[in-house]
Length: 465
View (cartoon, rainbow, N blue to C red):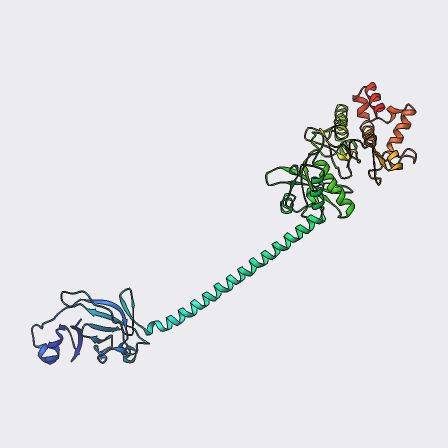
């Protein structure tokens, strides 16, 4: 804009006018005040950003008496206008005060490029370079800070991933160690040498069983025995299972565990609890069975519930089912199996109160031509075959003897060992036989059995026992 708007204070009067710059320079103020009109020219200007008056070609000019604004010419087509200038030094010091840079359009043209020297061109608007020096420095620190923070974050993430990787490797090594110690190699060898079908038994991951049992919470305990603790769990597919966890890890218990897996992998009978799989990655070995919801026969005999009474008909059916399972184990299985721990607490009842023979930890599989196995005496007092106890020779008749004690339990409702009786009659088997010989059977029979069963049936079952 080559024309100038001005404001003049003259002898108390104020007048404002617009005049062509050349006329203003050739005439005095008094002459122009006498004129009726003056020539003026308006040119459009395009804002291009900020300028620094210290870099202008022409000297600084103060255009108003009260320093409302000032201006300076950069070249013939560009002006730098400083608004609200209260101090001449501020207006000339570009570091303290920014001015607006305008570019005058030439007649018939609209191309007005921004200054290039000492200016930054941002979106076709010129700004003095010094305005960005501090910003660039500040931005540099911001970039460095962000980069450093990002680098530190990446370092932490890398260390965390490395830690997780090391922990995973340690866990894998520990699992492999437990697998070997828990007889994994022995199990594979036995399954291979004996021609068993390894696919029948699933190997569960330790994490899956931990989640299934809520990390083996005490509220999940179904029962505890000499060989371990049984927990109730739910697998990811929704199946409810019973997980048997051994108490100790020694060579003898390890053999029992591997033996139980080998035997149960061969058994397929509706009255024998089904083995779903095992886990060898934990400190102690684990077995996973189908869940049998109604507890043990022992509980129903010795803790009778009037809401779910153990009727005479149920007792006969349960005895028949257990007998069928033993017959299968001894005669129908591909390899004859001696259970070696038949007792009422190892007989489970499912949702329809059908018998399921369980706990094969001390069982033995034998060749068809064998008649007995000679081992260290194992079992539960009150159920042990006296001949086996004396000779250490276990036969299929030893299982039958123990089953006879279970039948006596069903008849009498009494426990196999009763410390309240005399030493001679402390064993239920001895007490029962003495009562039979003394013709006092009905004195020891359970009241419910007497009320529901016929005498001939009771006597027949007693003689069978």
